Length: 357
Ligand code: NAD
Ligand code: TYD
Image 1: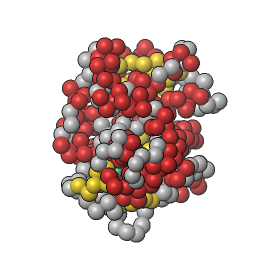
Image 2 (image 1 turned 180 degrees about the horizontal axis):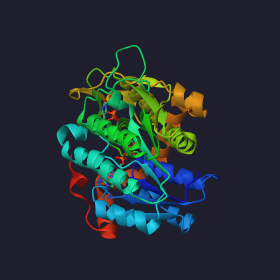
Image 3 (image 1 turned 90 degrees about the horizontal axis):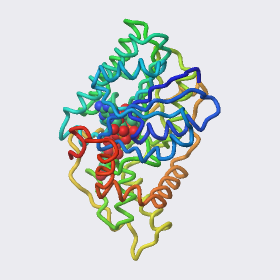
Image 4 (image 1 turned 30 degrees about the horizontal axis):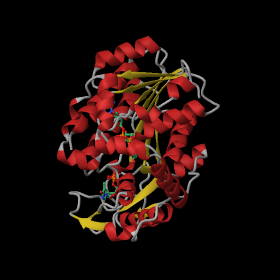
């Protein structure tokens, strides 16, 4: 990749940490990564344990808030940032329904601050913005989201991401900032915070706790293994046309209840218990404004840049369940809250929104 100093925001989160590991391990990137993360409840430096030592001088961490323009200016100048790969966000729909304010602040104002820092940086090459298919709203039983689908976000989360997409687009049109945007479907895989459906169900099934399914369990998401998402981002950053948007998906549409049942069966197989985990499935009140179906048409990315997912849903889910089984200490530290005391000791206080429900 044609970049010397990449600023990755939100690199201590789920997708950002997978991306950093993968980029440093690959043969086609020789520069350095500066990871800027404010370490909210979702940011865990343990997700990148050993990386600074494995790649001396090529991985640097700065605990900073993207809502702090002067901190960003200083980091851009100090590291001569020429590329931004922007993951940092508040990312959980349920939290956005209870407390939308931090979503507006980080996802909109934080993106604006990064765009401003990039616009005024010398020798700037690319701003890649990571977004979601949720900006398009909800589908009925037919059809797919394309890059031409009008934006109709339904949650405070998706509305804040839609707003950030518009800002990125506007900075390209108005100031000629070299940008690319990707809108991806639901991810799953190692290091996902256990508030999201798949890790939550895996861990509850292991601990034989109730498995909450919202509404009738028939809502559909299109699932993509996180390594495939990271590879798509790398491909777009390297070869994508500047000013363009690319949809990323897995061709893996699944109803929530089918996923929960698959996880129960995998956990039964890999960590047998007295009875089937399916007995733990518990239907609970639906999420307000719950989008019914997401499905992605990624033919633009496939046709122009040649990307397609390597993992099927069955193979990716098996890998994921195994990872959570083999990394119980990681999830135990999160579920007990111990990771937050450790972060406070190492890095000082976490931001306001650190432990809010
Ligand atoms: P995550 O919640 O796991 O991680 C977010 C990271 O951003 C954390 O490390 C957090 O500490 C950091 N962060 C939050 N606010 C910050 C701030 N103000 N300043 C600096 N750092 C801050 O999220 P994720 O699931 O890895 O998602 C990453 C990106 O991908 C987000 O932009 C999200 O909208 C997008 N996305 C996610 C999915 C998915 O299924 N998870 C799908 C499509 C797109
Ligand atoms: P989630 O992982 O929160 O991702 P998103 O809302 O961004 O799609 O939820 C995925 C789907 O699973 C969504 O339809 C809501 C549903 N869901 C449950 O049924 N139970 C749960 O406990 C959670 C967290 C989600």
